[in-house]
Length: 479
Ligand code: DUC
Ligand code: ZN
Ligand code: ZN
Image (cartoon, rainbow, N blue to C red; front, side, top):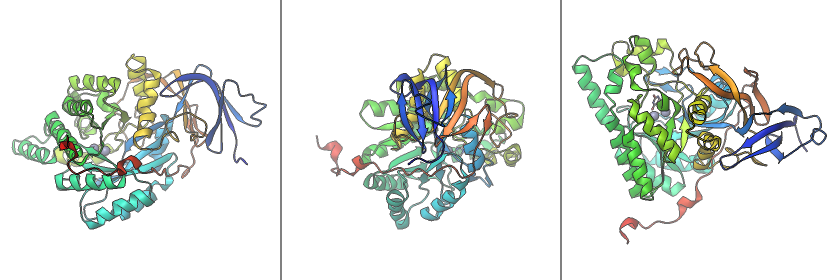
């Protein structure tokens, strides 16, 4: 018994992380029902047919790092779950993993329920990491409830943002130890919050109030130190670790050392960090400088080269956006003091096309690599593979049909993101989605969205059973 209309995609090349094959794809009931060399329209009677000649049929993108309508730094991110997931679909991204960020002392479950309510208007599928911003017995208990009853298998830790949401070493150790018991993956924003705080103060004392104070207070060493410390804490606890928005050679050195020594450390990179360098903080226009304020900041060019190499060689695994939008009037809060500029930039609509253009077209990534770093690795690391991140029978029919001949020039004037600035303004990209399919329905075609508010579903992510195996306390020294 099937419901809804069947969808038949013909004449394209199915691209997964492991191989590419010329095949037709039939979807109904929200899942992929058949993949075969030639599925006739007689067999799929009444199906809507898409001719994908000359195009690639790929798993829809998964953005593992977004902040829709985040209350942050005295304001609320301008993109909500409706506009943000719609902009994602326009760029071929069919799922996001956003962050529940409880205020210190706020119950984890209360915050989680609040975010679930906000996300009900999503037009694509979504899931949540939950941040550990404080510690007591209730946090210890609620982590278990989130894992066992609410489909959360990853917890986020901010090592920055002192006097707000920063997690110190005690919290990191306790939360990682609890995650190990529960089969959850710790993720971390690696910047030494104390050093950032001291550098900010020093800059202000020396009369630096402009947006250039932002990168100057967050030098690469601040990220390198935090990455090293947190990787060592994860090593002591003996748990895998996922480092979000890796932006420096210093953090990459940590990841490659850890992996070389057999420690499971995963790295995420933002498309913006691959392509934008720190010169944006020294432009004449204050508004443009402020529009680029995000943490970690954009870096000197040699870091960008190193990030690309790590993505190519497998030391970085996923690509994300940290999509967290603030308009010019919100950024203006920091006109007299860079510390008050809300941190965040947009990117969900452009992640895949920018990565295709500068990755695949530039010869840095194969099309299979492209799929691996835009969806498959994320699905595997966060335990939703092969339901997501793979074109196969039984997988969710979340698909992007990619036209390598389609071009566009990125601009805030034409983008669908609910923000008045685009960090990729004026960039021409060759290769864009012609169609996006979410849950078996065409939701983006001919540059137009056809979305239904609330059509997105919450995706439960099961815990990692492998973590449960009992581990001797001083395992490392039992040689
Ligand atoms: N960095 C940002 O730029 N915005 C939101 C949170 C973060 O870590
Ligand atoms: Zn962050
Ligand atoms: Zn973030």
